[in-house]
Image 1 (cartoon, rainbow, N blue to C red):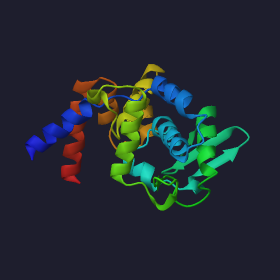
Image 2 (image 1 turned 45 degrees about the horizontal axis):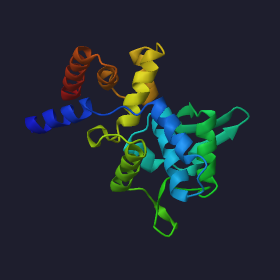
Image 3 (image 1 turned 180 degrees about the vertical axis):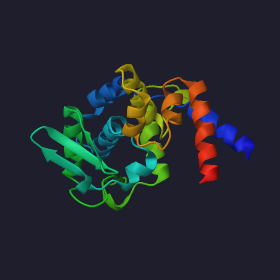
Image 4 (image 1 turned 90 degrees about the horizontal axis):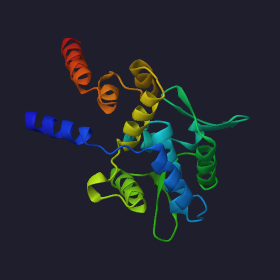
Length: 202
């Protein structure tokens, strides 16, 4: 079990951040495509980064969680609203034209038929792997399901947000992971110990 925990920690520590620069390049590559997979995947890339979504979050989103007002598009998740960028809003609307209700992100078969079921873990893995390939990243730098969250934390940290604010943005129960993702590993380990002690006594 301890070896498993160490392996898990190493994997998280080495996660490649998905950055605004990556997102801009993917937008330039995919935004003019009429292929359903390109439209869906670009919308996924925007939400993973701009809303700091986890894989589980992505699977649970519904079209009804997306709202439009005079200022653009918002995503509601866990009673928290996230304002999308202009390009993010455009990308999600293009996908909503195909999926206007119920499960938001779904599988697409090779004939272009959209499933009624949400994407599974392996499908999300392929979507992220595809982003890595489109950007020409080395295999060792491929994105994982945490890459959007890591990139979001690092961007928010550079903007001057406090760790507590970043924790709230990413819906973390503890500041440990925001601290780790922003490079404050010693403080992260302290918070992990505190969080574990608290859970053991709950």
